[in-house]
Structures are given as C-alpha cells and as structure tokens.
Length: 81
Image (cartoon, rainbow, N blue to C red):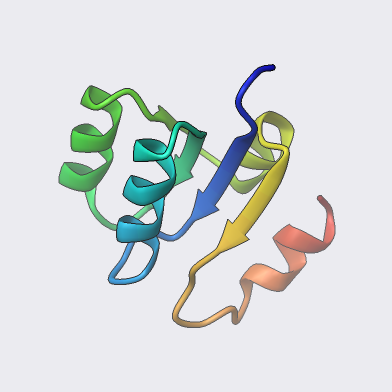
C-alpha cells in the first residue's frame, strides 16, 4: 500500500516539527512555506516534496493541514480549492 501524502501549509514553530514527524513516520509530505527559504531547501534535501502554491499542495496531497498564524486574506485563495 502506498503511503498517504500529507500536505502541510505553514512550516513555522508548529508546522515544521509536524512535517518532520510525519515524514519520519513514513508519510510522503508535500510542504509549502513562503517565508523561509532555508527551511524549504533543507526539507527538499531530506526528501520532502516542496510545492509553490496552495493549489499545488491540494492537487498532490490526500490530506492538507494548515499551520498558519493568521488566515487573513488567504481565505479567497483557499476558497477556490
């Protein structure tokens, strides 16, 4: 059976450890984070799939987890998914 693909949007204080734990547990993780290039590069080197948009995460993942400090204006973009 193929591993379930988990998408995580937001790799801050909560999202990054969650992404690492899921990946260590055998899940494929599709990650999106706009604010920290080093985190993205480190995760990509560790075998994570790095997405460039929320739509890309949604298209590639079976389940999507949002770990955002503020949802704010992002509602319009997520409403289209």
